[in-house]
Image (cartoon, rainbow, N blue to C red):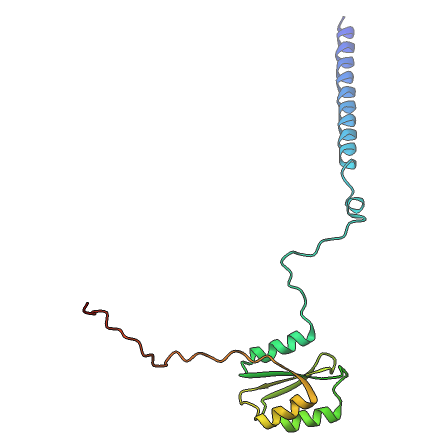
Amino acid sequence: MLIMMTRKISRGVEESRSRGVFGTLVLTFLLALTAACGANDGILKSGKETPAPSNAQPRKSAFEEDLGSMRTADFRFVYVLRRKDGAKIDAEDRSVIKAQTADANRRMSSDDDKAFIIGSNNQIPPKNMFVLFDRFAVENYSPPPVANTNANTNVNTNTNVNK
């Protein structure tokens, strides 16, 4: 009887071990199956364009950047000169611009040599401007004149009026 009990106990231990191994195998298989069933990002993103960030600023053209640098320099007078025929500004045009804007603080070529930006703190004399207007299409990008806040005003401040 002792032998039979020992066999029953041994068989019980073997059965519990086999159940444990079997259970572990099933659990491992289920975990592997669950991990393999995830979404494939490559497939999900294929055919879709990635949207640009919404807070991105549109890229400025070279001309807008050059004009912005003149405004940042705080020039009182900013002019853009272009040939009337739309062609590139050549060496002869440059010599006319240089001669007529000799007192300007800054001159720069822009827009693939189709525009010339002039920044100055001094007003270009009218006779020189006439020469420029005659030869070029002139655009004025000068900031508005600053209002004089110290100007005297003729205002009646007496509020005690007899009726």
